[in-house]
Image 1 (tube, rainbow over the protein chains, first blue to last red):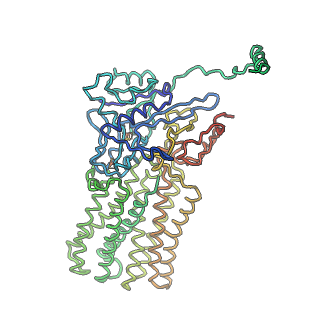
Image 2: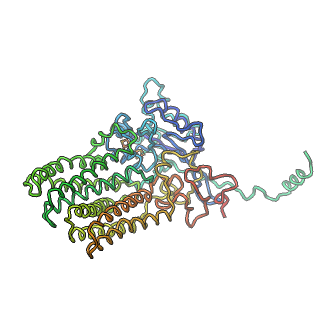
Image 3: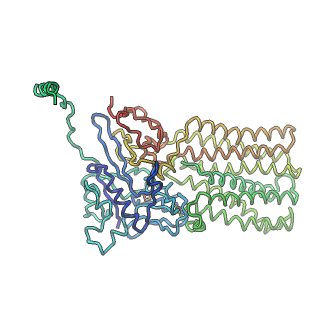
Length: 231
Length: 349
Ligand code: SF4
Ligand code: SF4
C-alpha cells in the first residue's frame, strides 16, 4: 500500500479549512497538542501540519490565482527518515506513512532540513518534531463509519479538492484522478518521489475582460441616469 | 539557514581539536619535526581532547529535547549525524590508550599505544568528514550538497589545528621553522579550497519556484504565504542576510582566517619571536568562526521557493528577474505585504 493525498489545484479555493480541520483533529490526536505560541499576542504562531499558500501563475491578463495546500507528501524516498539520527522518524512499510516517534526524537531539526516541502515543524513547547500523520488514528479506526475513515482535511474540504487513497491500487479514486487529470509532483528533480500528487488547473476558456465597460448605448444611458438621479 | 550559535562553536572548536590531534599524531608517530618533550606531548593532547570534548558538549545546545541526545547513536546505517556521533565517541578510547602510553612512557611509546594513536588520528579525520557530510548530503540545500563541503570541514579543521600546534610548541620553546611552514601550507591549502567553494556556490542552481509549484511553463509569484506571522519554517529557513553583510564577513574570513595567520608565520620565519604564533591561532579561530556563520547564512533551503524565492539562490527580497515586477518583500516573515493599492505586480504592464 502507498497511502497519500491527491489535491486538486483547480477546485481548491484557498479557504484554509483543511489546515484548520487538521489542526483541530491532530491537536487532540496522537501527536497533540500542536502548541500555539502567543495565541492572543502580536504575532501568533504555532505548529501546523498543513499550510495553504497562494500564488499568481502566468502574466496578466492570462494569470490565475492558484492555492497550494501542502502537508507531508509521505515520500517514497523519504530523506527525512534517512537523516534522523535517533530513529524517531520512520516510514511504515505496510502503508508508507511517515511518522515521528515522539518518545525518541531529540529535537535536532535535522529531518526538517532534509524535507524539501516544509512538512515538519518543531514543537518548541514539547521539544519534539511534529508532522502530518495522514490521520493514522482516523483512517484505521474501526469505530468510525467507513466514509469517515479518511484524513480530517479530506473530509472537511468544502470544495472537494482533496482525495485520499492507495496509489498502489490502479482502481482507486486517487490513481484514476492522477491518470485522467495528469497529476503532477512538486520538485521531482530532488528524487524524493512524493506520494501526494497535485492536479493541475483545467484549461478553460479565458473570461473576457475587454467588454466589461463596453461603450454601448444602454450602458451610456445608464451611466447618465445614474449621474443625474440623486438617491 | 538560521546560523545556530551552538553549532558554530561546536564545529569550530572541536574541528580545531581534531586538527590539533591529527597534527600531534603525525609529528609524534611519524617522527616528523623535532622531538617533543613529555610535557609538550601531553599539552598538545590535553588541549585537543579538551577542545573536542567542549565542542561535543556545546553541540547539544541546539537540541530541543536534550534528554534523548544519547539516542543519536542509533541510526548509524543511514544518518551522517549518527555516524559523526559514533566516530566522535569511538575516537576517545583510542586517543585514551595513546594518551596513557604517552603519560606513562613519554615520547618513546610502545607499538600498541602508537597504533592506537594512528587509529585515533584516522578516526579524527573520519569524524571531520562525517561532520561535513551532515551538511553535504542534504539535497534540499544546494549550497551544501557538494563534495567540497566535507573537504572544507577536514581542511579547515587541520588548518586551525596547525596554528594551535605551532602556538603550543612555542610554550615549550620547541617551535621550529617546520611548524610555521606546515601551518602556512595548511592555511594556504584551506584558503584555496574555501575560495573554490565560494566560487562554486556563486553559480549553483537547482529547483525553482516553477518546479516547486509544478507550473513549469508560466511565471509564478507568491501572493500570500497563508500565515499572519512567522512560522517554524520562516524562522529556520527564512534567514536572509544582506549581500554587503555577506561580503564583509567573507572578507573577514579571508583576512582573519587565512591572510593574517600566514603573515604571522611568515614574520616568524623572517625572525619575529615565535610566541606571536598565538596571534595566528586566535585569528584563525575567529576567521573560521566567521566562515562557519557564513556557511549557514549563505545556505538557502529549497522550502524558500514556497515563500517567494524564485530560485534556490536568490533572496526572498529579490524580485523575479526579467519578469513583471513583484511587490518588493522587505520582511520575509511579513505576510501582509500584499496590501491593496500596493500591488505593482498585480496590474501587469
Ligand atoms: S514530505 Fe518531507 S516530511 Fe514528508 S516524507 Fe517527504 S521529506 Fe519526509
Ligand atoms: S528532530 Fe527528531 S525526528 Fe527529526 S531528525 Fe532529529 S531526532 Fe529525528
